[in-house]
Structures are given as C-alpha cells and as structure tokens.
Length: 92
Image (cartoon, rainbow, N blue to C red; front, side, top):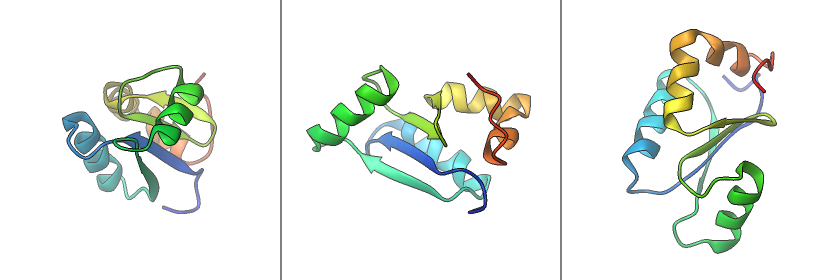
C-alpha cells in the first residue's frame, strides 16, 4: 500500500502497544517507517516536538498525528483509518 500518504511510527522494541500497532499496520498492508526512540534522544525529541507527547507509540499518517495505538485502533474500528491511508485526510 505504497500509493497512500507516508506513515511514520515512533516506538521502541519492548512496548506492547508498539507491537500491536505494528501488527495492525501490517494487517492493513501499510508500508511505514518505524523509528526507534529507545536509545536515540534526537529522534525522541523529534517525536515529542511533532506530537506533543512523550509516550510511545506515536503514529503519523501524512501530516496527521493519529496518536497512539488506542487511537489507531479506534480509527480502524470506525473505518476512518482506511480513509486516512487512502490520502483523504479528515482527522484533525
């Protein structure tokens, strides 16, 4: 699914919510950039500046900040995730 917007997830290797988000994105066939912030303070700071949050995961679809796994899951459940992934950004 490389025709849609760029998807970026900031996370770490041990976070169960990061793992769940990876599984959901994989199930959806989404190509995404997985940025580990475990030992990279520059990337962690970048995540905080972009999202305003310090917890992982933080997921972006295009320029839209989705939030964490719970937010991603709710978007999927409501059908809005497919709309975002198609490039029709309606999330604020």
